[in-house]
Image 1 (cartoon, rainbow, N blue to C red):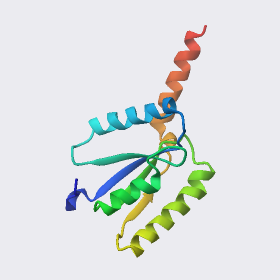
Image 2 (tube, rainbow, N blue to C red):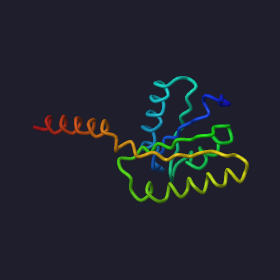
Image 3 (cartoon, one colour):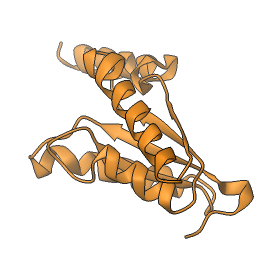
Length: 136
């Protein structure tokens, strides 16, 4: 799909990655649920930092070459560890610079981990309270 001027923005959900297909499956299910809740023209993809495909670099490159000029990277992490504070920002900066040199200017924006959102903490608290209460 070629983006229109109004849809020149895409998002990439970033997970850590694993070589275990059972670990990866919930992320594909999550992506499908997110896509079901969005307008048809909204582009959201899934990528992994390591150990699985598609890679973050590959997804960003594909979206940029497809004409998306702004790519939001949304980490599916509970908190910002070393990867999100150092490795990913450096990698995205280098990728943005490389794409610009290739004549494919794109703005890549790394967002805070979704785990830091208050509603995520609330949902986890409710699950833990329910499970602890049932254990009695």
